[in-house]
Image (cartoon, rainbow, N blue to C red; front, side, top):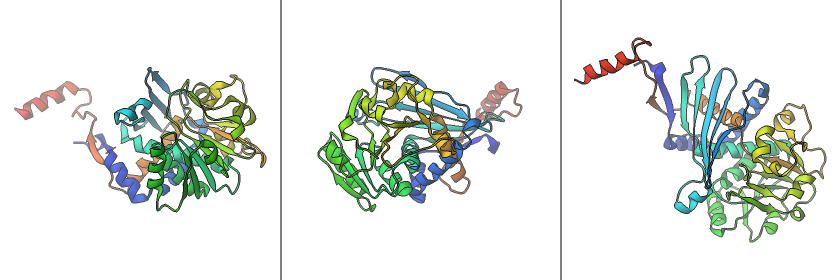
Length: 348
C-alpha cells in the first residue's frame, strides 16, 4: 500500500497524550503563536462566514479556509441542552489537506483541540488589548471551557488570580477543583458582581442559546477588558447593549461576527476593529488606561487552521497518531472498479 495514501488520525486518546506530553499551557501558548503568525498572513487566506445549519436545539457548522497551499475545515456543533443528557455541548473534528493534490494529510478530533484553540485565542487577544499588568480575571460561566481559559491567561498574559461565578455552584466547584495545584489563586463567588471585584479582565462563557444579560452596564467600570466568548450564534448574546456602546470592539472577521457575536445587537455599520490589523500594527488596540476593550469572540476558521497546522507539525516528531486507510489506491488511478475486482479475487 502506498504510504502517501495513509492519513495520520489523532483520536481523542492520542490528543490527550499529546497535550499531557507537552503540557496544556505550552500547547495553548504554541497555538497562540501559530494563530498570530497566520493573522500576519491574513490576506492570503480564503475567508467566509462559517456554514451553519440551525435547529431549535442547536447548530451544526462547517468552518473552511485555505492559505493557497493547505486547506482546512472543522466540523463543530453547539447544543446547550446536551449537558442535561450527559453529552458534550460542543463536539468537533477537523481535516487538513494539500491544495496541490487535494489529498488529506491530517484527520483529528477537535473537541479538546477547539477548547485549547479558543482559550489560546482569548489570551492572545487579551495580550494585545487588556490593561498592562492585569493579574486578576473574573470567569463568569464555569463550564467545559473555563479551566482552559484560566490556564491560557496565566501562560500568555500573566493572570494569576481567577474569580469564578456560575449559576450552578457545582460548576464553580468543578473548575476550582481542576485548577488546584496549578498556582492560580481561585476564588468561588456567590454573585456576578462579587466575581467582578478587583478584576481587570472578565471572561463571559455561558452556554444557553438566548439573548441573555450576563453583564449589565453598571457592572463594567473604566479600564476593563471583556473577553466575550459565549455569544457565538444568531440570537445568543451575553452583554447588555449599553456596554457595547461604551466599548472599543475588536473582532475576528466582521461579516461573521455581525451575524453571531455580541455586535448583532448593533447597527450593521457600527465601527469595529479587526484583530489581525491590531497584530500587524495597522490599527491601534487599547488607546488609553480608561478605555473599555471588548473582544467579541465567535471563533474563525483561520484559528482552527492554525491549530490543525500546529498538530500536523507536532506529529513530525511525536508518535501520537495512528495510520488511517481512507484514500483509495488503485494500481491504475483510472481503474477504481478494477481495485474492487482484485480485492474480490484476493478474498476468494
